[in-house]
Image (cartoon, rainbow, N blue to C red; front, side, top):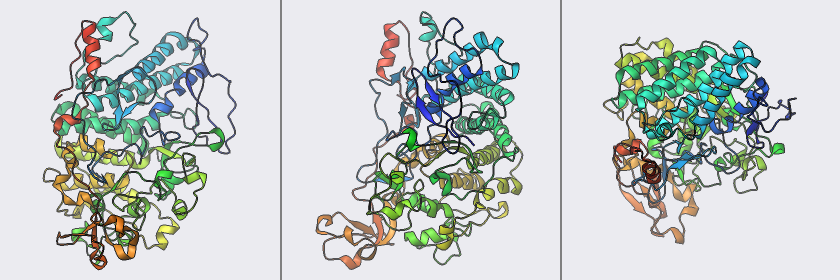
Length: 613
């Protein structure tokens, strides 16, 4: 199978597709185009070259070098799963001076998990759509015409889905706007529902017209269907939980189900890979769970740093906390409070690795690690071999910005969990068909049936018992407004997607942003149960007197005073950790910059500020 390679040509980003042995596929040596007088858009090669420029913006994977935009571990660090030392990162509290851009670089807003106020990619998608319809159409087959129209509409819908998730109402541009069309260029925001209805229409066209196969790692009907299930689940649940528009919520959720079933019913992918291999393999071309991935190659100077920031030595700054860890299901299928396992209440890391769902052991090093603020060190994106180099010199694969492990871009686990949640919400609130045990078996239980790798088995890790509708876990931590089944679906997402970038967006669409208020649970500031004199004696030094603290089971805090080694046993207290500043519901959406509002005013137009700002 061929894999994605990202390089930049002259004036356009070009994807070079190579075989598994990294040999270049034969293709015309085009790196630029002339968009005039019929010199371009002559055939599918020309169209593909232009379309390839979208890939690095939308399918970031682990990004490149030290770039953190849209990356796991280093990019998505703002959510309730992670805690840092001292004051937690605050939400935005004032209108920025500027939030605009006209750049095609992948500029993003980490606190909102999406793009800045930038419509360059919308325009680029409209250019592709216009040229396919008005120039290339006579030169290509009808099937190719419909396919490339679908590609353009998919990218437009993709970008608008992200813009709406960040800003809510945004101006909608369904065509190329000329520079002298000021009334259109400076139009105010269109309502969120109007924009997402346009996206819905684009996605319906995409699913009906995109090719099932356009070559390995190029967009096809299954890949776009997977993404559509993501965006429609987000918008459908956002509309529902925020009480915006019930009819739209139902429509979008039904499309999420339809799109996911296109992937699931194809039987082209399965859960035949162990969890660790999904994120640490040099090649994902044969992984049966991955629909699309980004490939890296040192010979082409296409490398990343995400493995390095999971290698046990590098400091991320915010790390898994005890609230997250307590949310992991026991491998007997129960929450820890109700488990029959005699070690259920033992929160030492080595015990957690053996008693919790296997994704815990595959995601968090099974011993305390001082490079983590919480001592829970996430290593989901580094191989087991990588952490054997702690205290030594790392090889290029797991050090610096020279990592070459492939990045999954979208995979089957997300599709089936999108599908199950959309169906569950439709059943619970919109009169949809009730969830069956068969639905659970096709999704959550299929995920839990993944094979374990040999190292996990050797440690005593066990697969988690199936989730049964007849005996759902009785979680005392469940929010009163969330039904038990939907709560378990949310738990499965939390375990499955740890550090991948979904958590903040999930909190926003569920209207649970108040989870980011750490005053609601003291466990946000805690790590594992640790015997410091035995497990981390270096923490008890003259330089840490008055700083290192543990918390006993009864809530008593003990501070290291230089003499009380034997008493330094308990839950690790993150040093200096305190809650972030107070925030309100306005943080669900980003404000527009004042300079963008001023720019409208200078032209005689009005740009409305985001509601609540």
